[in-house]
Amino acid sequence: MKSDHANPGHLRDFTTDARVLLIAGIAVVVATVGLFAGIALLKLIRLATNIAYFGQFTLADLKLQDTPFGYASVFVPVIGALIIGVMARFGSDKIRGHGIPEAIEAILLGRSRLDAKVAILKPLSSAVSIGTGGPFGAEGPIIMTGGAIGSLIAQMLPVSDNERKTLLVAGAAAGMTTVFGTPIAAIMLAVELLLFEWTPRSFIPVAVAAVIAEVERTMLHLPGPIFPFQGGMEVSFPALAGWVLVGMAAGLLSGLLTQMVYACEDGFQKLPIHWMWWPMLGGLVVGVGGLIEPQALGVGYDNIADMLDGRTIATAALTLLVVKAIIWSVALGSGTSGGVLAPLLIMGGAMGAVLAGFLPAADPGFWALLAMAATMGGTMRAPLTATFFAVELTGNTHVLVPLIAATATAHAVTVLLMKRSILTEKIARRGHHMVRECVGWKDLMRVRSKKQAEERDRSALLGFRIRRRKQDSVA
Image (cartoon, rainbow, N blue to C red):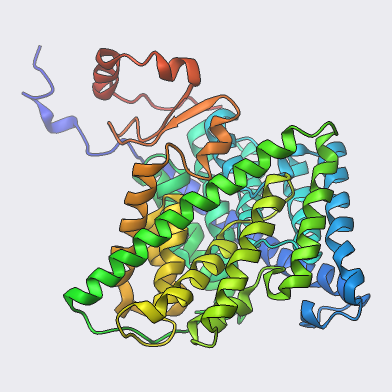
């Protein structure tokens, strides 16, 4: 009998067949549904904000700092947090948190199955949380909602577990594209954090979903790029030193923010009350923080625009950074619902605005942009996602090299200083250790219990590397 090496003619680079076209077609439907779900959530957030802070049932763009409630507005986040606690306890506790760890957990441990409760309650709880002043972004909940839509559609069809995972991630990518108009970054997020493989059978449907979502949002006249920025700086070795310095600072900030979030979570777990009440305590901290710095409340997209325009002075940026970091970490640690991406951009940008006076000369907003991307890339350990995200947000390809230098540096700092990221720490605390090393195309990510991780055997790992992948059985 001839070996495969002697007769390689029947072998292929990939096991993908024409069925990928069917899954890509389903991904088009998932993207469209996810797009409208994302738009609905953005409108829900604005409606919740106007009801909570102005008592008006309107979709007008009203600013939180203009609320007529004065000091009484400190209780608005508390009431919103109470509503979320009730929804989590009597609805689904999967709405707690910022969405991405829950999506990862569903993929790796739940056979990519999410129920209808998550698809409904997650956007509602996030709208209440952010609308009542929660210092979060909408992207995490929309990613989770898009993923739930993809999973629900897949569960109605005769698809394999891997195909269900692909459709879940396709919905998540469409959701991220809906919010920010960043299809390339959405695809990279899928590759770096959600797919756990990079093969045509997964990549093609996810890419289709992201592109379809971008085309549809453009046809609906949603803005893009949403934070136009044309600045930059002259390339030189002093400039490179500045890029690396910002990356190092962002890496340290990423580590600090991660530690703050989980220190707060540990503190809440020690309280002698049910976790349903924790968000109320976090909401009180948010309310007080809002009195100190109203700009720290809500999604804060105006802050990002001001930083990129160079309109944020160092003292105001420092105040925003400190207040936002405290109320965000306390609120997230309390188990409320909200995203991390926009807050990371704001806190990183504020740090960049503070450091700008000590760095080489550059156009206004340049150092804030680098720090935004580096903080996002370091905290989420997704440097390519952060790099392309910043480029697509601003429409500025000329900053690509500075961005990758800063995000790679931040990534190096967090990997060397921290065992786990803000995303994987939550999963590890639930008893599952994730290894994100690429030791084989089947093993882009392995999930094992803590005990199994401690008993890891090198010879078994070497055998695992060369084991051939079997096709998923049809569910």
